[in-house]
Amino acid sequence: MNKNMLKGPPKTWSTPVIGEQSRLIPCILCRGDRLRPYLVCEGFSYVRCTGCGLVQMNPQPLAAEVARRYQEGSGRDYLSYELANEKTFLHLQELALADAGFAVLEKELLSKAHRAILDVGCATGALLEILRKRGWETTGVEICTPAQVYAREVRNLDVRVLPLEENHFPAQAFDVVLASHLIEHLNDPGAFMQEVHRILRPGGYFLVTTPNIGGFQARLFKNRWRSAIFDHLFLFSIKTLSRLLECSGFEVVQVCTWGGLAAGTAPRVLKRVCDRGAKRFGFGDVMLIKGRRPEGLMP
Image (cartoon, rainbow, N blue to C red; front, side, top):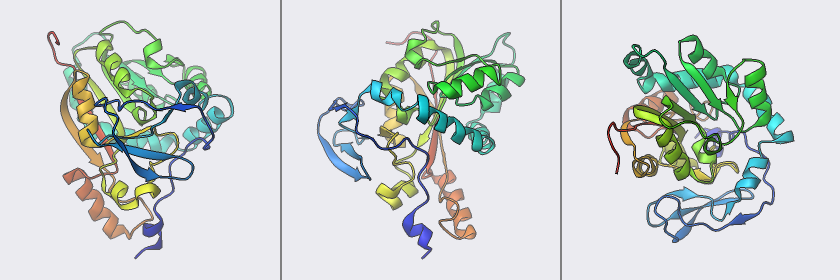
């Protein structure tokens, strides 16, 4: 067996593990308090809710502590990481949008005088810049100050530095909201989704991308999984993320996954077969779920 397969791929970028104030909270999905140990990592751990299956850090670091991770030194490190990988990340985002039928969605909105899109956690704004060239009215949210400044000053984009809920966007202001590799970092994903629902126009779409704890790699590598990192407060499966969307008033209209095996962990032929299977059968390392705000009144 490939030695790299046993060891697992390198973990994704994360801020250093440090001691932070934390508190025990009810499960954000089912409000239950029966939590069992699930993954023990180096310096932090995850539990699994016995009621709904959501994997989470609990006790959870305070929101103020989490926000500090993206400022000053760590914020500059994050910007450097994003810039060094910008082309790769942009390519992956474009592939994900293609899988989610984004081109069809664009055609649906072609007749509108204004097509407004919001990218929450937009990093350097590379994707927003592409979308602006395609005729979208673009807005971004990025709480990492160095990245937000870069997006505004270098790309001349409208990118806000406050968390989504603190921007107080008008109700029904956007046709599409994107959140790529963001929701797993949030203290309260439910409140975030409710705000997305409020600012989406009826019939609008929310495309959320996040690592898949139910995928093949997560099951294979467990605490060595590359997305089991200090910055990820929640690790969603298709089931738990879909339930959170539905509890927030969305219809789940599409689910897609990709990434069967990471590069370097297996021979290319095996990786190719596994990647195809992951996309076809839904056990990929990363998932995108497309939610739609229904038209008409919600209860």
